[in-house]
Image 1 (tube, rainbow, N blue to C red):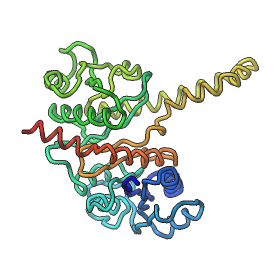
Image 2: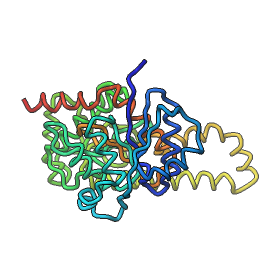
Image 3: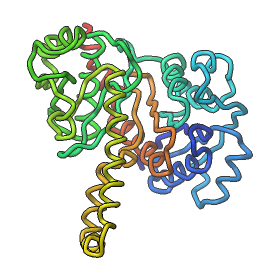
Image 4: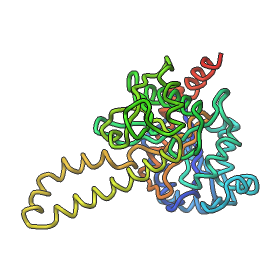
Length: 337
């Protein structure tokens, strides 16, 4: 029997907590016998939610937390003052080694601060990046960083490229993943000061498959497997991706309802179209891991429904089985020697 993967889930974080969070966590536990879920939050509230579901009691444990960190709260102050919050207590479970991973749809700022302050960085890692998977024409790409490190330095982006390569090769099984840096043109001399300074460092990095610059319009085509940028640019790309994807799906659905002919056509193409559009639903890919920490920290959208929570928790199993942290540590440590 495989080793149990223990995941601390912030049951109180997000717009749809605790109902969708608990539902997603239980669905993950019911799908994988290798999981043990620690639901962290108000014990009485979680117990009421659990009564709605069937599950193996040995796979689920409640960890009581009396406080909740709200999205609008200053993250550093909240982490320091709310020691009994669901975010802090869940991260403490990872720090102590009682849990392998943490999943939350709650405050991004508190998760990022808590991940670094409580869980801590791997030796040699300068800045842990947030790295979500995004859909492309050829499969998926890893967008790194999408929100953790605004105003990053060139050395940070080089580490992002290395960590992203490890993730795509180990978790997504992409052999020799193609790495590109986001730029406003394909030429090497294009870009701002950060990109111009980072480009030659990536070009001369022997342990990544660097293919040069990538313009934003080429990201959906799947030209690169690892898309490197600092957090401001990455967050803009991610939010635009989400907005365009959602709008496109609505437009396609509305267009199919404009006439009797289009409605008949919609019935014929519905199965194939549904499968195609599913690939562009970001919920299918789980949350964004904060790479480079001593344990796995995964941040999901604040509006996450059960499907994204479930996929984020299941993502933790793969992460643990593939020893991603160990591989990142080995690569970063080797580079520093």
